[in-house]
Length: 343
Image 1: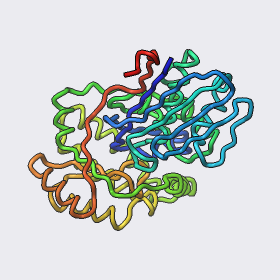
Image 2: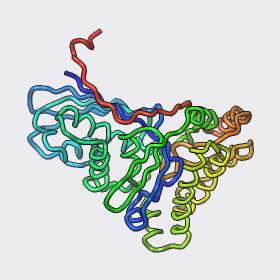
Image 3: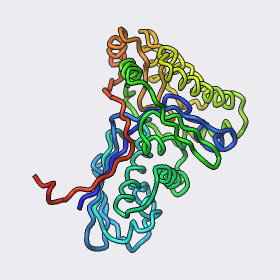
Image 4: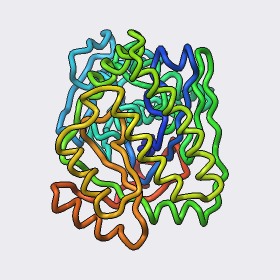
């Protein structure tokens, strides 16, 4: 038997930062996001014996662990170890685990959290756990933020698990995922106007988030005002999207970026600013760096007759334009017969 799992990466349009503790616990946070046709994958093959073998195809890492010992966090494959240590029954017997992602950690597409969801979903299928999507998202959040102590928000785990366009509300003791019923015409038009550009480098989001949290905890006026404004812009963007007012949506992306930059100095850089200014100079209505900032992917909203020009100019400036599409499905797991999969 072979068990497979995949979860989609996400684009967060607005609200990132309001899903980070302690803001959402005190004021409530909101995020507008969608998943895209880029994924994290995992394959589990149960084996006889007491050895777990994990292979990361992206980083060319292979490691073996004895199931009879608690796995130690040492910076190598810690997400995998934390899942195994946390989930009851995950270390009852040996298995081979293969991991792969369409985007590296630090890309701004939520790849680390998406991989955590993918592995947790794999374990649900293998161990026949009666978990809901909310259970999986919350468990993935707990593993990253509590077990491993990785700084970050709460949106990525829910986006990857549920999939599609969602308006997600975060509160101190519960989260609500509101799927948006958007006309296919609006979705096609939005996808046609959006451009995704890789900035050429990844970043460590935890440091940026620490600065952001510090600004809020210390009640710095600029940081608090920016978070409150991002929360309102998220609501406005959701309404513009549902009503098909896409140029308003694009302009609100710009407003979101202006406020996002108030949260931490490291969110932007000279190279990021140059890319964004280039896009705006050639007609883009708005855009933003995805994720915590500092690198990764730049999302830009373009007039349809300027998109090709903006793409060319961004690549001249050092960016790399990447094709993508929306994906409405979230976490998926399935089983196949190993013998039938031999070609």
